[in-house]
Image 1 (cartoon, rainbow, N blue to C red):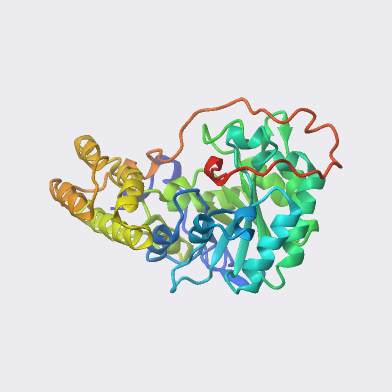
Image 2 (image 1 turned 45 degrees about the horizontal axis):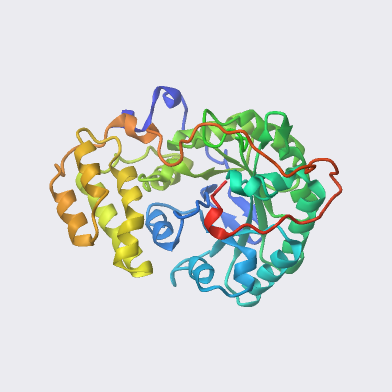
Length: 393
């Protein structure tokens, strides 16, 4: 049923010609298909990554780990930085605002043989972070950004370092050109642009033209595009329209981990398979919940899984009552009983791939520290932000 995978937006998008796209070269890594799982705070822990990996190859990045508590050996941070024993390559996203702690964190990760790739977050739009000068505020101070990236690269050895950032703070303060230039000059293996500003949050459409502009400016390392990859053919459209070297997938895979199977298929020149019916989705949900339980224990796992349950079931006809029940499940047995109450043969609706999932909080006014943009050569680090206030970019 080809229509399931092709909205009107993608109806006329052809499959690739042989050799049209190439693997992404990120240091010694060769990523094929050219697809990266976006780091998402509280989402892309190893259970979620393992579920996604079952459906297709690519690069699967951990949720964000903050540098200072990692250096200080705090248990919560060390646990978040865990990988499954079978996970390879091991890709970790690191957040830091101080070159010293970033350098020490990278030194520790690399020295312990913990990672094969480090990505750095300069895109967090959370107000409590940006008003302190963190997250997506950092690229507005190019000298500070350069010093942080330099500290990571110089301590990473042969482990490739990449950076991910937004278009800017708002439409009047676009920073992606400086961020891309600094990434290339300071020795990053690739750069990734979420083509929305911090003010935009996750609202509206991503500005793919900004990705094309960045690709014209950054010519020596791969440029990855992030924003609005809901269906596999969206990736083909983005790469053809912008010339970028690969795509970063965020909200599009929430509750739809088979999107990676679809992406693998189209980059091999094949039509995606039909999506699973509700019975198939329920089986994925139970496996995901079991892995989360292995990771954090059943009580915490089920609490975290509730939002995943909403994403998995969103779009199925008549599923509103089921979602209401899923928000209160406290055990895998209760989850299994709730899922058994719904028709396992219910087909996945064609429109459900593009149903918005994840963060949809509209726009915001971004506040920066007083005088933050007065001197682009000021490399003074801001105050470190507690992990619990952070979010993905």
